[in-house]
Image (tube, rainbow, N blue to C red; front, side, top):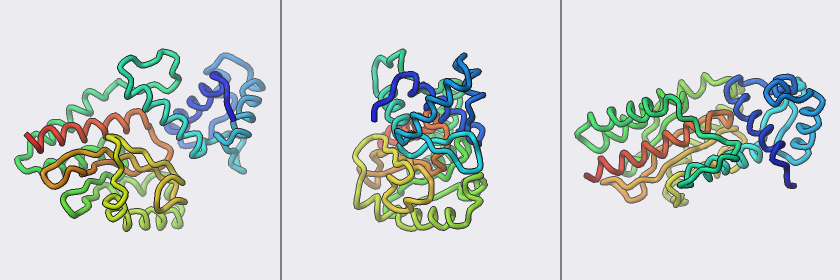
Length: 249
């Protein structure tokens, strides 16, 4: 089901507001943002819900994005990220403020290491600090993980069943990466798209890079579907590029 440009703008605004506030987004907030009535926003939200991009939790009048809503948003971000001339009418905007400092922090951590495995671990640790997600990387035949306690402090993981689902995903992640070998420089698996742990409500954002251990090494983060995709995608992709440059110099 196709949606209008305004509906897409409303959807993306809900995704960004939800990422920041971790609470369902209501029509009053959006009405102020778009300069229209709450009734107009509610009508558009109802159409987005009918199209499968939003859902209304039973305890709230606000809406939250579905996996399909996030996929539309991430695809729009990817289009902008990969374009040499980003479209001005693209409602999903990559965040630039502070990212130069963040990428510089990763670069300094990587360059401070003399060994490739230490550089990879340093990059993962930096991603944990900068995103609040769980960080991961393949180092040879091993999977390095960091930041699990940071991940499980997120409000989404107050539910024990969801924590167990994430643990199942992590237990099977390394063999899945070897088997599937995602081919793009940046790969994003959202919620139900994850090959394992489909009900865990997480997104896996990974970058492939060439290392002394393998031409198909990976670095990335795993976090709730509710996150700042523009910033995280940029940081993960940049970390992969920096590791490839440094580890193969």
